[in-house]
Image 1 (tube, helix red, strand yellow):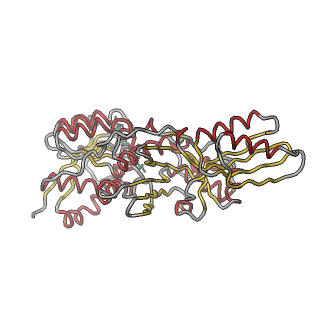
Image 2 (tube, rainbow, N blue to C red):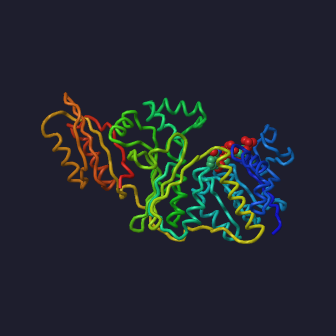
Image 3 (cartoon, rainbow, N blue to C red):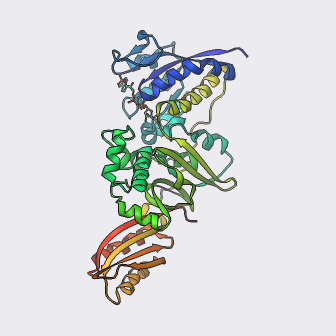
Length: 429
Ligand SMILES: NC(=O)c1ccc[n+]([C@@H]2O[C@H](COP(=O)([O-])OP(=O)(O)OC[C@H]3O[C@@H](n4cnc5c(N)ncnc54)[C@H](OP(=O)(O)O)[C@@H]3O)[C@@H](O)[C@H]2O)c1
């Protein structure tokens, strides 16, 4: 077959967009030889056309009018790299309305308005691909949708936010406070000036929703994902975890149990022998358990222009080949309507550190609170023997609601001076 040129209208030319243009300039010939499609970025929408950009494109390729690119009959494929919900969502919908397939890296729009976008793509039989939306440079969406199409995924545990992983790594390795580690991350460019989306788990929750939707064939949106960030993690939590052979990570967890899906993002202690424990700094990794394949782990850079551009260009090749030679990628796979399990009904293991009065009978009193809530204790030990003692517990798997009720009751006991630390434990079994 002879080489075909596909004209790309690119919306956004920031960190990722400019890296895509540079990659196509550098590798475009190789790509054309390998895939029989030549990817040509012909038009680009930005906010500021006067800004100097390190991209080999003529000035007149740029416009502030993104809608005109989407409507342009000389554009074959729309690459959305603006980020955020608006105007990205309307522009993607307009692309489908004009019969153009879309590649996007936008986790926000997918995790909020995924159904609308997929329905619009289906209505015109066009592709929508979004490999870069979760874990930037790591191939994850294609493996899940395509390579694992015959598998039943049971569980996913992921480190899908580089900023929080960087902060927790620095806290673990240097004993720093959360605030000091975050300041350093901001100075080195690993955290935004406003780090809320990362630190409070919003970014990871959006990615968790996308992964859970694909893995379990049911629509999970960002607001279905239980979310806790890392701002409350103390050096003491990290040191306690290390002493017990665990590391603290912000995990995105999606599970299918008894036909129900649970999706959650929270910090957790994982054993230091677990493959996710060695994922340091801003790297990402997703650990997948399937019924037949067993355990898989995908690891690599979750962000950065060049790394993310590799995922984007891979998607462009797929979509361009379908345009050139016919065919269509797997569309929306959310064909089931599985209930979302509320956080209180999920099960997990817990680590609890209590400061208590050091007098006879206190341990029995506390153990009774666990027992009558149906939470069984796997390990307990006491440290410190003065006015105050520290009691440390690790539970067996228990229901979240029952464990939280136990903790609420313990906080009300006069013998409990403080709940010094409370962390979930994952990855044990
Ligand atoms: N950065 C990463 O490492 C990474 C990794 C994975 C996924 N992603 C995703 O990739 C997408 C792009 O991220 P990025 O880091 O490249 O963002 P960015 O650096 O902030 O770039 C955004 C681009 O969009 C343009 N833009 C924004 N609003 C616009 C509007 N209304 N009309 C026209 N142009 C507009 C901006 O124009 P100006 O240049 O004129 O301001 C800029 O070129 C996001 O969805 C992000 O979540 C990024």
